[in-house]
Image (tube, rainbow, N blue to C red):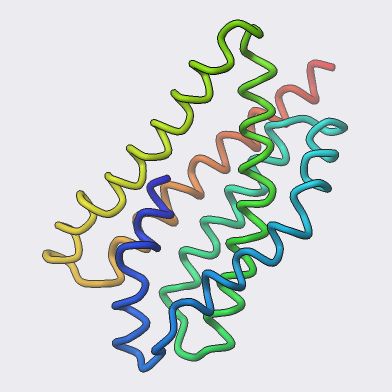
Length: 168
């Protein structure tokens, strides 16, 4: 949620400052891989495990947020959106499946509510807290921080996936 909060709050101004007038290019491009890849990501997570697919998805999301730092035209904006969409396609449904794996049938409603609350808190932190970072360090800083945190989370999941594979 934090990285997406940064993208939602700060990307339009960052792009406008570079002469890119339609941030909708990013958001539209982001949806295409989600529509095309979600089912495949779900199947891959069933076969190879939730951690590996989620880790790859988080890596792609972090890469997308980092790429936004370097976007200077419409094509690069679309490319960053496509990467983000591929990441979200891998992460979104797989995290929900993982949550359901770990939750009893009589607790799934509460687990879902908790998951979405965590997403909301991440968006709040991404936009509000890192808004102060923008004021202090400039428009690029929140993207750097969000991509680093997302990349760190991806590393944790990938290490977890490797550890799980070794114990099988």
